[in-house]
Amino acid sequence: MIEEAPSLRYDAEQRMVANEGGFTLLAEMREMRARIMALESQSQKLVSQSQKLESHRQKHMDIRQRAISTWVRDALNEDTERRKEEIRRLNKDVIHGGDVRSDAMVVTERYKKSSTEWQSFGTLYGLSPDDVHDLDQQRCYGSLQALDRAASILLKNARTSLPTEVMKTRQDIVAMLMEGEYEEAEKTSSTFLCEDESSVAGE
Image (cartoon, rainbow, N blue to C red; front, side):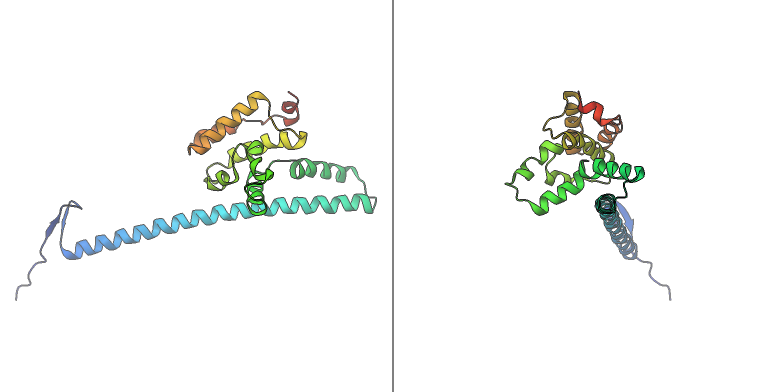
């Protein structure tokens, strides 16, 4: 007995000719591809969250390191040059340094939107806390560091405004971030305030 060959049909939407088995296989492959893409997206989100947590962990350890070193210096009278330098560095980087990602989290979780802290966040970083959360932070890590460097000038010197050229460049970086132009923002940020911030602050 001669078996009847599977009938072929043309699918105009998919622009292809196949039998039912072929269309079924194609549908399964597309479903599998969609699942893979969803898993890749989820994986990227997990990597981003992991990086954020590690950054916060390091910042917290710096704060506790400063507390311990200061106690050893003051309570135990162990005021060595190495410890002095360590405390100076931690004062500069942790206490008076910018950290837009952590600060956005702090302001979001601990202050109301009507508070001065929330309202003045833009003065410090050029972005609102919500803007920071909405960014694809994996793609603009260097830009966020640039905003940290600019904020450090304001934090260390108790200022509310940056030198004109610094302010203009920060505004340009923020505008690019808000437009999703991450590559351009990263390129501009790579050389922004890479010199000694104290010399810039004095301008």
